[in-house]
Image (cartoon, rainbow, N blue to C red; front, side, top):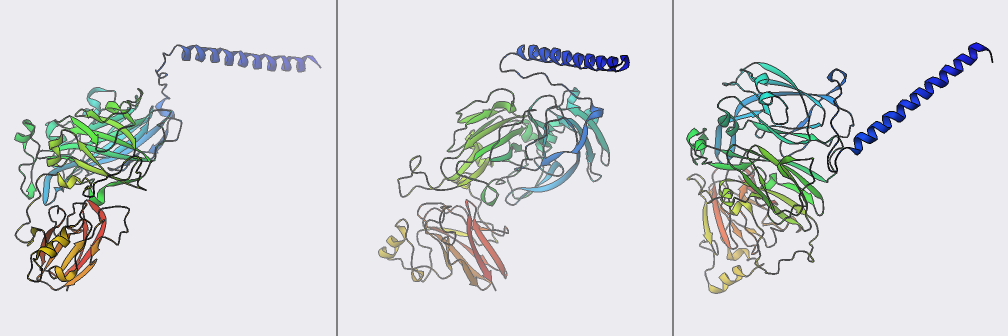
Length: 508
């Protein structure tokens, strides 16, 4: 080996040794740093320079949907483009709210999902047709006003904000343009989920639920506008989940299977009330209180408090099938619309839960949402108890006793002409879906009065046209309701508490 070769070998070995020493020293440094972190605390967040971050479009959804979990391990520049639109929307049956303002024109606004350490690049546009200035105060943002001043936009303008997601959690955002309470009350809110860098534990179902108050002028049907007087005294005309009465009921209910793990991201947009969030018939396995995804979750809770402008993340697994109601356990708010539902399908679990009484009725939110609205003068709706009155219906004691035995039906000759029976067991999700109406399809002429009779002795039912032409109050067992059809057409019908019930009236 000549001197030149020896020198090259020497320097190669020396460089390798230096790298090895550096690795050992760094390893010892991180071991010491890690050992210095108290138990239960997380290591400090190390931010990559924003100029080095790979850009990607933000993942966001509308309620009750939730964006997919984040699987990447590195920080990104997350780009979001949102537009403010001032619109109208139906907030209760027959009630259109004219001051329905929303991010992307929806109430609640989007749920954005990012990773801890991400740089969020928000582009906010105010629609040219808007009448007001708007902005966003992000609760996840570490900076004055949550970025609101940087995002002030007049109609037709666009503004941009860059902000780091510094701490994991489930955070509200809202418009902070004066008057702030009015803008929030009219729907200008949404949420950002900042996942921990290590991710969240896997679950089977994730949903996004937001409670809020609507301060409409009064309870009359038709067009309603915002009432500052009601807002100032905290007298909400409606308390709702996901922007409207019934948004999570009937055919809009969330569905899961037995023993699936359910995670609800629950926000409370307020602007005034604290929520006592509760799922009737469930105990929360985990509760990340006030949106805290860092601390260990609470376990075995029945009800959790969610402040206005705050949130909670709750998890549970249904061990028995059925309909589980979401409520604010400040329970009179049920009368104002605070109800939703999760429908769980699967085999009955008699070892855990078995109704013994033959008259046990499935709990229905619709039975508690205030007094049912009386049919208007054009609906020709009437409700009766017992056998529906008609000239061809028998009024003998024998005929009446046949209708009041639980689980019985009545021969068509004993009922008025053009009567549809709701059959025994129709309220059970695990029953044959064909066993709901008799007849399933009724063909009549214009001007005909059709009567629905609840022959199901174990459940409350209503009659609802799927296209919204009419809806009955809830019918107790052996009550009936009638409607006169004046216009030709096909009218699909269902039951709001039991959306698997399907029938049809054809008028021609």
